[in-house]
Length: 296
Length: 295
Image 1 (tube, helix red, strand yellow):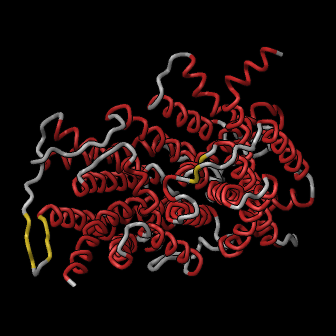
Image 2 (image 1 turned 45 degrees about the horizontal axis):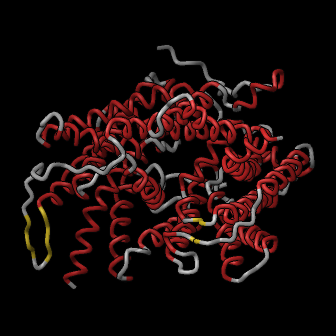
Image 3 (image 1 turned 90 degrees about the horizontal axis):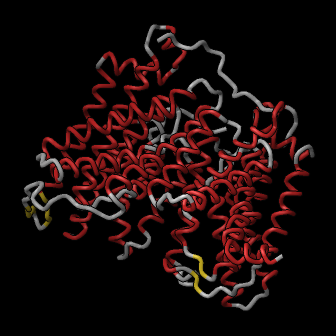
């Protein structure tokens, strides 16, 4: 019983990182209807740059985290400018956008290889002071609490930004209908650029938290979360922010529960992807999906 | 003649690899020609490779029969998953096929008969270079004949506008499934030949990166005509070798060149490098009827 509770807690922590990653993924999809496959590469670079700031430039993690998040956001602006802006008017922009994001993912990943080498690196041992608490037989570390709080902060912040601010309203307007938004005097291209900034900043933040949690970073770490992120946003409904958050938690819990029930980690991914496949076939709009456009 | 044998001795394995990858690229080309973005063709190659590999390794089946069995199993699986999956469009189809591909890969990792994560070791080496190119020639012929046939026109119509195709009386479900299954059969065949070429196959070779690589070959070469995917495959496999020849170190830079080629093609040559050779028939990218926003 205690083991199960421990597993559930662990699932919650890793699920909140998945959620944070997926929120950025789904935000771009919601606004542009483009699957941005460079998102995992920005996730990787966010984590690696934070590590470099801590190790190379001797920042404390509290300074390195926001700097690296900002850096990831700027990468998002570059990504939009190079890969998405030039093809925005094409009739097949969601297909060519997918391709150009793959190209950017390869370029970002090769940059990560060139700058940081192919090896796995980790944050210095005393980057975060890690206290360990025992609550009713369940072990919780202060790092886990910090991770989940940071993730929640970002996700709540984004939701509020979209709901209450003027720029958030503009983002929603562009997502709904970019032509109407343009006619109403919204700078659509600027709003899209800002969306990429937000999305990539959250992807970078997820990368840093992921690196801290697993204590391992490598230039190809984005690949491990790339497909899981897709599973999460489909689970929650493409373009839905609360869906991505809940989907992330559900995915994290499914992973640990599969391990707990089967006793091995072999089937962990299989269950998740079978679930994903089933959702696409039986309920393609996901659990909180807002449109039916994906189906013929 | 001596020159040719020398060339084959040095570059034989590279040529074989190009042949197999060209087959796989063409398998995706067929599916793409009906407008269906599949990321499952690497998995179909995996099914073909494992089924034929296991049959000839553990059950002593002859090479030809093993290949047929592998290719047919890929086709049957495509038929079964195609019917529900092909209701999805665009990126959703891509993601469903991607999820399917991951399930196949994970199955290969976890099953005993497939040799798990280490892979299937000791597959008899039966595939010869000329066989690959013979099959490639046949597939090219079939694909070339497809264009202008009833099936080819149906594929093209569905790609341009599925709703319009349906109103024209084209049985869209039938033709979409046909394109999907044809692609899977060819991918399965290529996978089987690959398995009997390399002695060992492992699950990682048929994963997400492999599926994306096939898409890259198609985009770089062009998806409007059948030589396009082959052109893309040859170029992207030869390019790293040439770079090595002129002293560019392996690793990051070569990877970056790969990405750069893809980016430049999608930005400036949306119909691929093949469109450079077609002069007059080159199509300009379609532009949405909306004026550019003033800065």
